[in-house]
Image 1 (tube, rainbow, N blue to C red):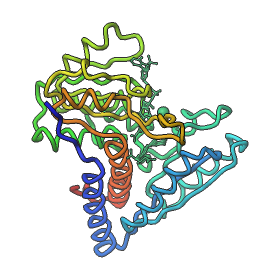
Image 2 (image 1 turned 90 degrees about the vertical axis):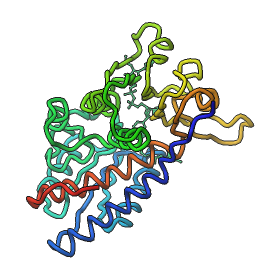
Image 3 (image 1 turned 180 degrees about the vertical axis):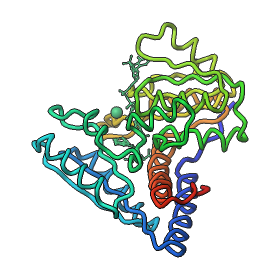
Image 4 (image 1 turned 120 degrees about the vertical axis):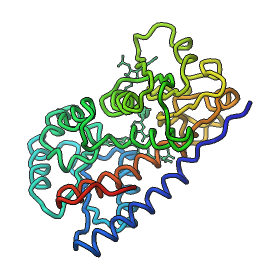
Length: 296
Ligand SMILES: NC(=O)C1=CN([C@@H]2O[C@H](COP(=O)(O)OP(=O)(O)OC[C@H]3O[C@@H](n4cnc5c(N)ncnc54)[C@H](OP(=O)(O)O)[C@@H]3O)[C@@H](O)[C@H]2O)C=CC1
Ligand SMILES: Nc1nc(=O)c2c([nH]1)NC[C@@H]1CN(c3ccc(C(=O)N[C@@H](CCC(=O)O)C(=O)O)cc3)C=[N+]21
Ligand SMILES: [Mg+2]
């Protein structure tokens, strides 16, 4: 068996088109242009690429993009003041503080200060809590994008399927598990202390890998026909020693021989994260204006 590839890049392009149409309607009918502010602390080159891609795609969707760069040695207080200013700015509907932050800053403290209504990453405890109790809130972009891909592929109804999420971070694993639980999957969350992870993974109809270990998940961890979602973004040296390439947390070649559907890296979950960020920014702008949630 050879898995069908889930083309996240194409799905994301479609989603961005729908977001752009929603933005155009919000402008025409209410005179509102959504604004997304991205704050980057330090000079991490990979982060700079994300910030540039986000800025370009934000403008392409018809939204305003505001970028703020603070030096790596900026004080936590400077960052908190920047966030407070963005909270107070009515032209800013969404705020993203790029993670990870330098070690001398407390990410939880910074996220806690972001107005939950502008928290387009969905990382604030208010939004995490809303997701946990099933209330409407802003949902973290990466898991939201993963769920869209799975539902598109499996026809919408996931009830009763076994889902295994490898990774329990607050930004991917935990919210992913909550979203799958809301779809009535039987959800298991695995992590570094999980015993016999290959056997557990083999029980999954939906297997989500969000670990940060290159090619951890092998083909013989995959149930035949399963849907495999690879969240991992790992930069590894090329085999011939010339530069680096991106690989996921799944060993794509062996997993694709067993899975029914699989996301590639790059071109899978990553582009969906940015498209969902834009969707969340439109959703946030509508909510802040007292308008209903846009259908996307
Ligand atoms: N495509 C995208 O848009 C995004 C991609 N990513 C990528 O996704 C991956 C995960 O990111 P993130 O959630 O932030 O990572 P974290 O490092 O925060 O979490 C990793 C999780 O994996 C678990 N883990 C570590 N080693 C093992 C192991 N050997 N077996 C099972 N579980 C293990 C950890 O367990 P424990 O809790 O016990 O330590 C932890 O829960 C990374 O590759 C990251 O780059 C992240 C965000 C967005
Ligand atoms: N506050 C915050 N929110 C985030 O959402 C956040 C963050 N911090 N810190 C870093 C991680 C990582 N992340 C990615 C987003 C898009 C791609 C992406 O577009 N990847 C493409 C191309 C990658 C490439 O070629 O470089 C792909 O996988 O096809 C990857 C990774 C968001 N993150
Ligand atoms: Mg990584």
